[in-house]
Length: 234
Image 1: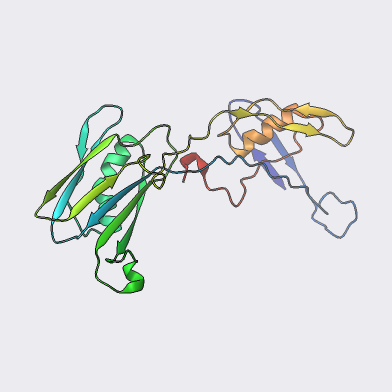
Image 2 (image 1 turned 120 degrees about the vertical axis):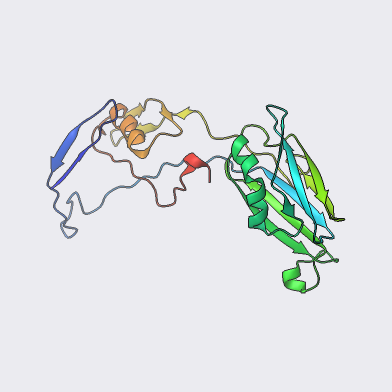
């Protein structure tokens, strides 16, 4: 016995029934179930900032960011010029979470020839940190920044998003609505009502079911295994 009920402020219903599983009977409705996949995938280019530290030593620095909306400056924690990727993220994540959202950081350690030290096994000449936003945004996360050094002679340069093709701005977040065209075996064409980009699978199926010929209460919306929880833009 199988039954479902969902309260969503509209289109509520309760069904129950018995389903017999038998794939050996020709034309049995469980011999084969048709599966159609509907996906909405935007262009995903996440904003990236790069911090380059040449000749790192035992000193520290503070990275101060300018909020693009308020024009106010917000300093990071004091950080080592040899900070790991996780330590740098810990030092600056407060600013990013306050203005836009979460980030991830990757560090590359390069030798004097520009080769990765994990391959060359030579001393570190430059630390390069790539700071990438974990979601799509409509503008830019930082308008300007200032580096303040403490007991360090290292050269520290910040490359903000959009200053170079290697450090892109974010592509626009997904938005808007769409409709689904349904063509049945009799050649009848019907069109669903508008479906918002962020509807759950249940409501996508409901909009199609209530508008397309012969599909009422016959389809089920399921989250695809490859769905990455795009509501958070990760």
